[in-house]
Length: 316
Image 1 (cartoon, helix red, strand yellow):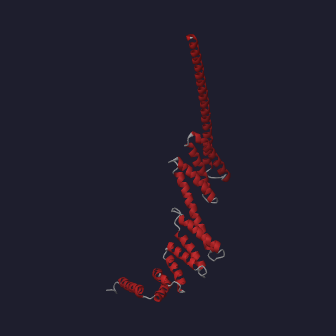
Image 2 (cartoon, helix red, strand yellow; image 1 turned 90 degrees about the vertical axis):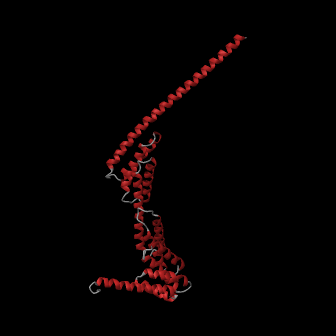
Image 3 (cartoon, rainbow, N blue to C red; image 1 turned 90 degrees about the horizontal axis):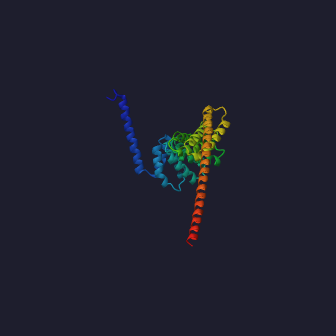
């Protein structure tokens, strides 16, 4: 039957071999000596079976303290985790190796692999970037510690990649604030602040032109929805952002849109000036009315006083 269905025969043979290997591995785990496990772990490692290698290394490392085999076992165990894409664990193990064997010939590679594991564990730009910052610190520390290392070029490239992720994250954050600015005044403010921070952190970014214009637009829209008492300050800021944008990007594709903001801010300031004049006139009239009322009260008081004096004289 197997001859007629060779693929079934191969599958059956494979199952038998797998079962045999699994049985052998489990027997080694239960009854094997430390030396047998060490030799088997190295053999599995060389064959690329990193799961079994790592499992055995984990079992024997606590038993090898003080032994000359401990150093290599910890190093290979860290690599076994890395090869299984357990980057958080491999980063921990490589860092631990470096701390324990700082004078080892493998120390430089371990430090690099710690930093590289952190790099591999860093998420896409649209997720939380806390681990990205840790990876950047690790890579930069390695470069500072081993400036002439053969791994330095790789570290620099990885740093460039991670910084670009931070740039993408900051760009998306600023854009999100701008897109949701119509919800609250706070979002308009947040958009301006986020873009301002982006300009400081990534002055050479490909997104600078777009965000610089959005900063002008966001500031203008913030002024538009503000109370009259805040509008002069905010329209003035929008005009300043406009001037900065024109100076930096005189041939920008956003020029026409920016000019509309300029016109709107100028007209806004004119309206503010009229409002302020009306407030000034109103206050002047109120002050005049109050002064007149005060004078009238004083005159009335004087008349009443005179009347009282005259009545006293008459009674006498």
